[in-house]
Every structure is written in structure tokens, then in C-alpha cells.
Amino acid sequence: MIIAYWNTQRASGLRSRNLEPQARCLWCCQQILQWILATINTHQAVPSLIFLSEVSQGGGELAAYLNSFGGGYRARYIAAGDRNNNASPCSFIVMWQEELNPEIKIIGISQRRPLVRVRMRDLTVGGVHIIANSEKAPDEILDDIAELHSEPHPAVLIGDMNYAWSSLDQARTGNPESLEDEVDYLYDWEPVHPQLQATFGKVSETGGFRTQILDYLWKSEDISRIEAMPPFPGYNQWTQIDHAPIAYRIHLNDEDELMTDEEDEMGDDARSAK
Image (cartoon, rainbow, N blue to C red):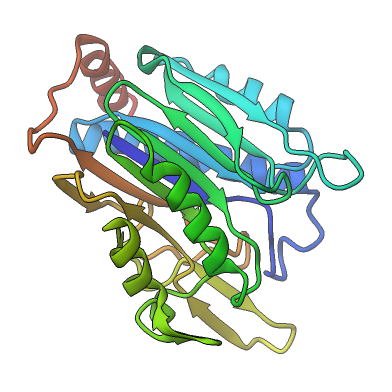
């Protein structure tokens, strides 16, 4: 099973600064659809579940656009309200293979930073956009992992963690334990690197540039095999969108997955379109 995540709306780049949020998210939707076809063609595998976060405007129309893609996919706009009950920038679009028939629900202690829980037959996936505060982010990550740890199936947490990968093994302010050690001790979960040099890049007005790994995945101990497969290796579109998409292939029960007849036909269509 292949799952992916992309924080689509924030833009620190100069070219995208004047674009409307819906236009920026539409660009990401177009890139995701191209990636789906490329994945089918290259890996003979169909991405199963995709989260797009920071969808605050035109989410319904964008979900309808993704629904028109076909190939057995469905998309749904998951609106989260802010303190004034307006559309929060923490809203999501979830796209999935229809045959999965997932149960999708917003849960957690905060509507402003919701956890989108997707339950499938053999796996539960949580999609998140954690608060952009490096001191508060670890508590939200711990809360979300605690929620998913109680699931009856293997589980993963994927998203923009807003907590740098380089900080995971370091002591936190007021806490001698690193976040990685605390999660391991409490839940026996571990983080999985996205296999990108950076998932966030910021371009300043003066042309300065800095990058970090902020987007990645946590997995429960009963995930037997997992591999990162970046949708766009070497992603460098930081002047368009300041986050890069991430994706992982999850193997349950240590078995390789076979393509269904429908997925095989999609692969034929992707190859003939090239």
C-alpha cells in the first residue's frame, strides 16, 4: 500500500506569493495526478491514499476535480473549523482508492490541529498538520500517536510534523528525553525518514534559502516493512510551494502486494499515454 501527503498551500516563494490559495492547491492537485500515473507506470503499483493539507479555500471544487480523475479514486474535502467556525487552514482533502472503503473521521483534542483518521481493513493512517511551534509540536505528536496506538490494526502517522527531523534525537526544552526516545518508550513507535534532503524550503526576499525536513512518518511496531518513495526525488519547486510531497510504501505481514485487474489496466493506460 502506498500513502502520500502534501502540505499544499503555504508559499514562501516569490513567484507564488501573489497566487490565490486555491490556485496553489490546484497546482499541487495536478502534480499529484501526474505522480499517480508515473507511479503506476514505473513501479507497477497504485497509490492507495493521499492527504492534501492546508486546503482552506475551494476545497469542495478541488475535491470534485480530483474525483474527475477516474481510475477508481474518490476524493473528499474534510473541512475543519477555526475558533470563529470559518474554514481553517488545517482543512484537508483525502483521496483514496474506492475499493478500500475507508472510514474517515476527524478526531483529537483540537479542531485547529485535527487528526484525520482513516481506518482501512488492515491499516489505520492518521494525517496531520502539527502546530508550527517547535516547543508545542512534540506534545501534539505524542497525543496523535497515543490516539492511533489504541487502534486494533497497524498504524502510521504521516504529515507536516513542524518538528525538524534533526531534533528528534535531541533533548527538549524542560525535558531531558528526546521525542524519539519518549515515543519509543511509551508506544514502541519510530520515525521513518522521507528520503528527501529537505521537505521544506524557504526563499527570502534577498534570495537567501534554507531547508529542513519537517514532513515525515511515524510507524507502529507491527509494520513489518516500509520504504519511502518520494513522489518527486530532488524536489526543487520551493518558489512555487514551500513543502515537498512525501510518500511511503507499506508492506503488511511482510508480503509483496499484487496488482488488481483494475490497477493493471490503469498501468496500461499510463504507459500508452506517454
